[in-house]
Amino acid sequence: MLGPAELAELFVKFRTPPAGRRLVTEAREKSPVRKVRSSGGNVVTHYYSPKMGRVVSTESHTAEQAGAYLYEFDKHVLEYWPQPTWLDLLLTNPETGRVNGRGHYPDFMVITDECIYLDEWKQASYDLLDILSMSGQIARRTALVHFPRYLKGHVSEEESYKLAMRRLVESMPIDGVGSLMELSDQLHSCTNGCIGVLKRLLEKALKRALDNGGVWKKRHLSKSLPNAPQLDAMIREATVGEELLAKTDFDSRAWDMLAELQNSLRDDGV
Image (cartoon, rainbow, N blue to C red; front, side, top):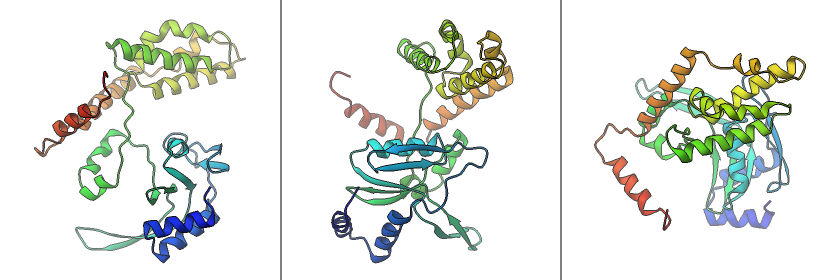
């Protein structure tokens, strides 16, 4: 946590204007400015942050919680404050010129040794990739975090999937689930290599078992599996999405340039 003198030094370093200093100061005093809550479709999380010296709460166990963990272990992040302020935004429709007002609570205010910024985390499907290509400004201000699935036919990825599955199975508070590891190859196919899908599948099966006396039966997993149309949709969406990630309509050589730079950044011997 920063002391008053340290924060004042950062304001000078970043040439933060008076209005910005007020926003930061008030956010540090009042965060969170609204109660973190669940609306039914999200899972609220709470954990103690050694960096912040307090409990940090988020409104999502996927996107926002992942962001909080990132800040916690990023050595450049000095502080991060959830639900820091209320923003009154004026949005202009580029086609009609009409201005509409909208209010918003950003997910975090982040203070680093390089800058201070408001951050927003969203979990999205592949179909939102088109939004990033609509505006250079949006592209500059957005970081795309993609967790690729584990592909069948690649020994290292199959082993990584099996290791992740083993850890999930070992965390299940019920006897008899160790035999699930015998199905790792088939579950790899039926979850399309997505650990998130596997996690939800095991959670559903575990709930069925606990709701039926706490005794593990194979039928608990069987009744939790996706049906054929659901699995087909997952495979199709992942395949199309991965193609979109590698696609650029404008012949700027963007893909080749990035690949060349990534190769140059590889560690020796890797």
